[in-house]
Length: 354
Image (cartoon, rainbow, N blue to C red):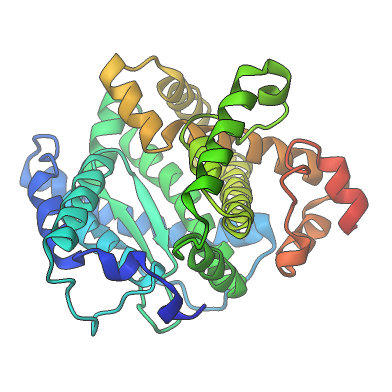
């Protein structure tokens, strides 16, 4: 990926985005200093103890060392996210600030979005946390863990370990397969390039998008064509659409694999895992207020939930049929990742790759 070919990273005042996002992030739930220190210590411990069971179930080995997780609050997560996004979109710490009003406007918009997201994210493995150097970092957002475990009324330590099982799986995925970060970076590079298409081509694609959405048969045949994903595809060039498909498929695989591993490991190490899974799934499916539904749709949260469901169904089906060792062929390289048409038809991936 050539940094010179990117425009998004240079169009955002990332420092301003971090400042605005941190200011707008809602405070975490009220808690005592003792509880705060306890959850920080337990999350750090859980992120370490989850590593070996995840390696054992997945068959992926990222090396002898178990990296430490970084336990953060919402404001710290926003700042970390802006640094990662700067790298993902081709920026760098040495880049000059945009210095224009448009750079600060896009920075403020980015910060506002991250502030909203910061209230809901439990954890995240950031493969770009090392900047231009290889490496990543696992972030666990302790105020949100406290908020959700209270909402679900579950055993706190069990829930903290359960969350870590999912997020540590992402760490193992990327560290055992370093090419994944580069594959993601290349796709993001194409996605954030300025398109050379003229306005007539863009309008034509928008009209085609509207026509397809009116046809129930066409809409049903394209799982990723609705909502904001479909609208985004409608204004993209063909290479950008292909890059978006690659990112969507990769995200679906990574989330589904993590959910599969979480359930496979869970009963052995998390005594109340059945209760946690049931209540957590009920929370995912709960109907949101109208305004929140609109915001969630705009930010792609519904597509994210679809990734969990479709991805886990794919991994469950393949592992049940060929076993985890054969499934791990999927991590060989970009050519062995599922195609968009194979996510919902796992046998097609088995026939093509295995």
